[in-house]
Image 1 (spheres, rainbow, N blue to C red):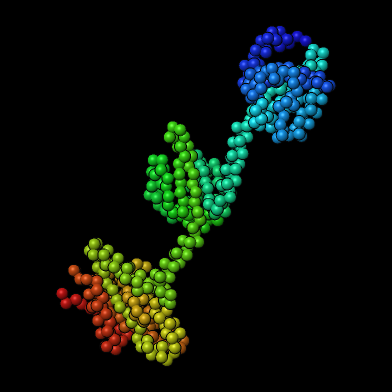
Image 2: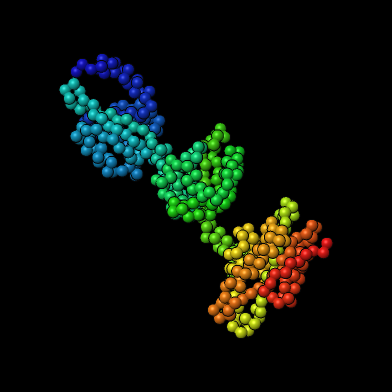
Length: 424
C-alpha cells in the first residue's frame, strides 16, 4: 500500500504523537485472553492518567476504569471494537491516585496493507473542567430559577443573555422572547429620561444602582419593581455583564396608593379631604405668591342642611352632599380644587383667578347645584363667600374673610354669593 504515511519514518510518527496536545493511546487488536494490551501512550496521556509509561505498557485499558465508569459506554466500545467500526464516547475513568476524571475519546481501527486490523488508536481528552463548568452552570440556572426574584443578565452592550423563571412570571416574557433583545422592551414611559441617565451614570462608574422601576409587562400592565442592577467586571476592571435582580412590589405599591387615595379623598364626596386640601391650598398659596399671580378662594355651605337630615334622614343628607360636590367638580376647570372643609362645607380654590373671575366661577357652581333637584328633598341650594388673596395677606386671614362673607350670604337670605373685599 503506497501511501504518504507509509513513507514516513515510524520514529517520526511516534515522536509527533508524543508531542500531541491530545492524549493518545494505542492497543493491539488481539481479541483473545490477554489481548487489547496497551502498546503506546504519549506524554499527554501520562499526564492525564497519572501513570508512568512502564505502568501502562502491556496492560489492558481496564486499568483506567473505576466505580463511576459507565458500563453501557464500555459495552458499546467493545461492540465497536469487535466490528472494527469507529467509536466515540465519554465516561468517567480513574487516575492512578484514584481521583476520577471525565474523558472523551474516539477509537479507530488501524489496518495493514491487507486490510486486517492490527491495532486500535484512541485519541482522548480530559473534559472534567468542561463537565464541571456545565454542572456549575446548570446548578447556577437551577438556583436562579428557584428564587422568587426576577433575574436578568445582559452583556456589556445591554443585550439579554439570561432570564430566569421568576422574570417570566413577573413580566410575562419568556426566555425566548427576550434573548438577544434589550431590557428597554420593559420601559413603560412612566419614568423620564433623567431616571435612566442616572442609572447609566452609576453603572458606568462600576457601582450598583438601586431603585424602583415602573415597567410594563407583556400584557401591557404596569409592574412596580424594587430593582438592583450590578455591573460585573473582568480582571482588567472592564465591564462584561450587567445583572439585574428585582422583586415585584406591584401589590404593595397599589395598596399604598389606594391607602393614600383613601386619606387624600373624602370617601363620601370624592373631593379632597380637609388634610389633603390644606396641603393643596398651601401649595397654591406659595406658587401664586412666588409667581405674582392672583389667587381666589370660595367657601360653600349647603343651605338648611340640618333640616334635610332631620326631615329625610342622614342617607338623604349624604346624597345631597354627593350631588353638590359632583355638580361643582363638573362645573369648575381642571386646575381648580374642591375640598370638603367640614360637614356640609366646601372650600374652592380658583387657580390664577382675580376676584371677578372667582365670583363668576362661584356663581356657576351655585347655579349648577340649584339645577339638580333630588327625588325626595327637591331643590337644594348653597350659600357662598368668595375673596381674592391680597398683597402680604396671610392665608389664614384670607380664609377668615371668605368665611365671614359666607355667613353674610346666609344672613342675607341664603342661595347667594357674597364677596369679601379686604380693608387694607
